[in-house]
Length: 209
Image (tube, rainbow, N blue to C red; front, side, top):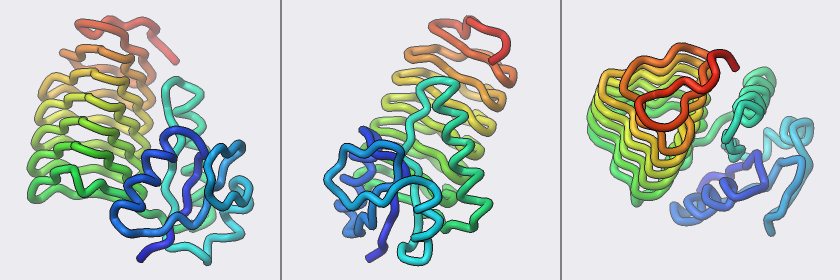
């Protein structure tokens, strides 16, 4: 049994806790600015560093629904790396991970996710319920994938990207770093870094974040 610390005290933390308990691991405690969960609460990042020898790993449970959320996740990850705090991955047993899939550290995979063959998921990636990841997909660090997202084969997603609920990414597309794909978007062409994309046919709402 592993003891897992959680950074974040909201809805995503609830979902991650459900999976932690399902797989028989233990929630060590919550580290957050605000906490609404009925688990041990220790404070925030400085306290996380103080407790790092008492748990096996930490996972990030901070949503990234906008630019501020993405930046917040980046800052937390930088703190974790700087202080050599170990990372833990939490993967739902209700999801399907195909052969030759490589999964990094600090990764959350929710219920009913399908990841197809030869894909690579790097550190601190969050893939929420009912997402589908095609074959040969590369997802770099600190990417947040919302529920019901479909990502076609051969897609590359660079660092610090957020993909909104029920979006579809066409096969072979590349999404540049620090971009945000809004809820329900259909992405059919490459997206440059630092771009916000909304709705059908990859309409660029704002050229630079």
